[in-house]
Image (tube, rainbow, N blue to C red):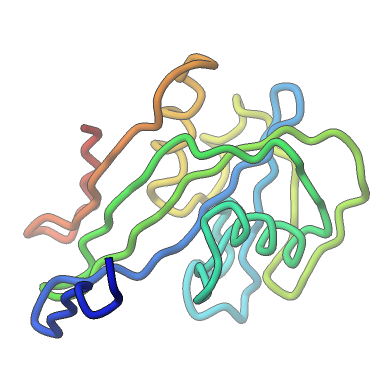
Length: 166
């Protein structure tokens, strides 16, 4: 298919692609506590991740973001799900959820925030980005051969987060 067949209509709904990465070590997950200076999610725990840049595929982006924010290189990153976040009438965020297992390497904290290994059983006590606990619960419930999940996230009329799994 030629490039000209990719019909781009500026009046259509668009998504901004991002990765969200969870690295596991035994019964722990590596989370980042956003720095107090961050514009979004300051002082809240989240997975590792960021925007997918032009020319990157999902795995390349996740590998780059993980290395930039943690110093780790993980060879078994795999896609476990996607979430479409309705941000507004014309724009959404497409989040590709990736997981991997920690093997070795020294974690290096970046300006993005403080890295911390968190026991899955301790998630309740932390100030988390509001969908992280729900996403981690979904990921933890998956079997090794499960297909990737698909979900939609939006805010209801009371500005409460809704996360619906397909």
